[in-house]
Image (cartoon, rainbow, N blue to C red; front, side, top):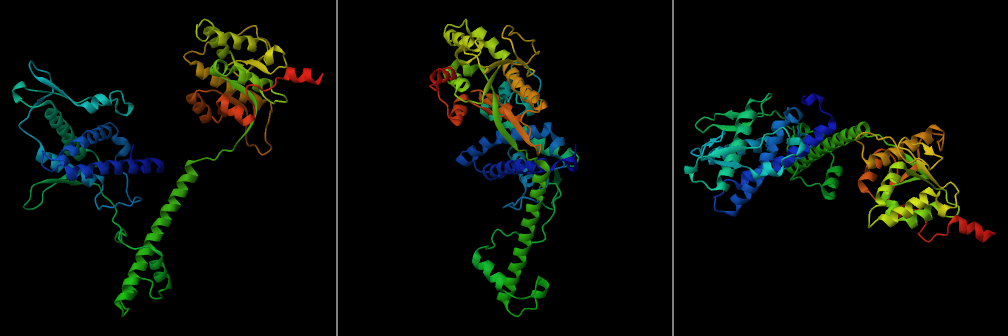
Length: 452
């Protein structure tokens, strides 16, 4: 709920995001004051919808970004941070706002509704689900063009965000300043640490400077350098101090990043020893000959665990005019035990709990509530792996992570889900290529008859 409780990752993510927001603000502040008939002013109007959506997100999630994150770990080319640019934009919008145009929040007879297109574009976007779309009504006698009314409404929303919300939020982000002899203006109220040395953007860091600095002998601080009689020597010593400060800053930043990486990530070594393959329905429909070749290849180490939900899907596809033939062929092969019905135990049916069935008589399974068929296929593979691991199958002596089950599917989303659960997943073509198999691989039964 406050900045002290933010993780280092969130702090960095907020910093990068707000710097992107600041880039939009900086560009808009440069273009918006241009005359209205110019291309620069038109370009600024294209940036305002994005800035408005940023303000909507910040209104909905103030607990995430406030107090504002520090930008000390970022090299800013400008002396202004995003809050400075936001304050400048508020001053520009206040000067451009047409106070004579009045909006009504409640609908009235004859009044024309004004909506913002960016609100319609992002309707249903989860981070903005609690934000009410901007809707106002303008009097018909105002004689204002629709796009001009939208622009005016957008400016009013931005002015509310900057001049009221950010000024009143705790801690405040903007404040109203009253310079002597000048108009009141909004400035940033965010406290930031001041660097104890000037920026080094214009400081040369090539090899020649490094060599000259490294070979120069003299005092180690600027206070000692004042006693040097030569102006060139003093300049070199000043450069050396700046470079040392910069090197120390970079090293401190590198150490902090290493600490973040060491605490935020856990390295997991997964060894894949494919012994059980769990095929999805698309493997039977699109690549049945190749799947048969994988199951019946000579001296192959692979067994197929066909999820019951796949059998159910194939039963349903039998009635399809386009895929019915392929579904019937697949069912005949699966119910025959695989390998052309020659047996051998290469094909087994598996439940969603990872249990291997010895009989193919019953293929129905209790419904798992609102789980989709893809979820059931994934559950079959995960539970089968868990059961095999519990039985002591393929356990490394050092306790490493071993996987003997591979999910085979052409569905990319399903593969991503499996990989996120540390379960190997491949499409059938890639797996067959890795295993050196193809659709015309000689089956086991043919190999046995040839030996006879």
